[in-house]
Length: 369
Ligand code: NAD
Ligand code: ZN
Image (cartoon, rainbow, N blue to C red; front, side, top):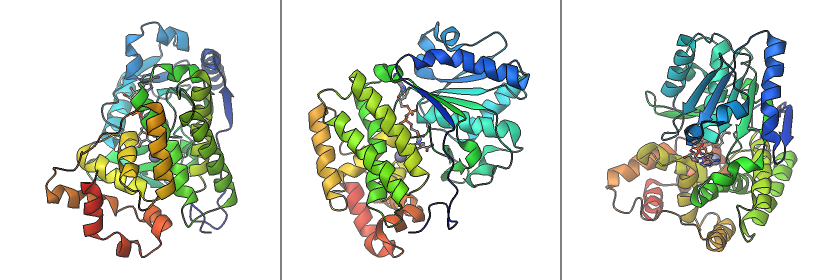
């Protein structure tokens, strides 16, 4: 076993507190107020997925008070270092120097944005300075995560994925300080997600754990989390309706545990190839993962077959022919973007992964997507 974080015995941190259950979102206001009292700072920042901007009553229901800052996060593009820097600047310009708490309400995009902004309030410089491992030196602002869609595990992981358009790097601030201080896991919140999106994001948890369990860097705790996540995903996606109350509850648990699994293990082949699609075509993470797994029966035969059964059972659709008509040079660009991800590829195929993943073979895989 090679430990995920590089030291012999990585000292794993998890989210210290969470509330779980239908209606638990109503505890948010009191939690934020407790932070206002404890910190002596009156203002809180609420970063909310823009889907909810149509609900004018929501801020009050979440406990927003006069003097707080509410920003709706544009989710058309997944987080970038530039967008995170701009948001921080905007909040500072609005007079928020260090808030009592930062609340992220949304999917992986919004949860990761809130994590990054919370770290940058207390650490000098720009988001890109902290892309990497353990570069954040000061604890961030206290942060509360409220996921509204399940699957990425962003609520419980120690990173916040950001694309840096200047350097072409898609990498997070991997740090114990990136972990949420408090989560509110209320499955009611995911009832409004579209079925396809619910499936794409949900599959992120499934795929993370398939990749971890098929990898070379295994460890018993990561395996236990991953095995449980796969069983929960089977319950949800073989169930009559993946979006029933119990389906949404189970997927929320799977997502949370999947994020814990990520702290102790690596992904494999799907994520790097999916990143190639995201970098070159701008496809979002969840759908790009599904397109990728759909094209990888030769590497993950059992998971691929199960995934196809999930699709049939739930009547969702995966985009097809997204690469079929692309010129060769775009596919080569994707190959290059994908093979930058050495850690997961080594986890999947060993240090000689380039012998298996030749340019010709990877271009052929992309052509099938
Ligand atoms: P997302 O946050 O981009 O949201 C996807 C879509 O769902 C958006 O259109 C959003 O508006 C909508 N949505 C969210 N909640 C909704 C609701 N309740 N009702 C209706 N619509 C809703 O998607 P995601 O798949 O959750 O997150 C993807 C991001 O997460 C990527 O940037 C990826 O890199 C990141 N990620 C992070 C980690 C981590 O450990 N930090 C792990 C995996 C992925
Ligand atoms: Zn993922």
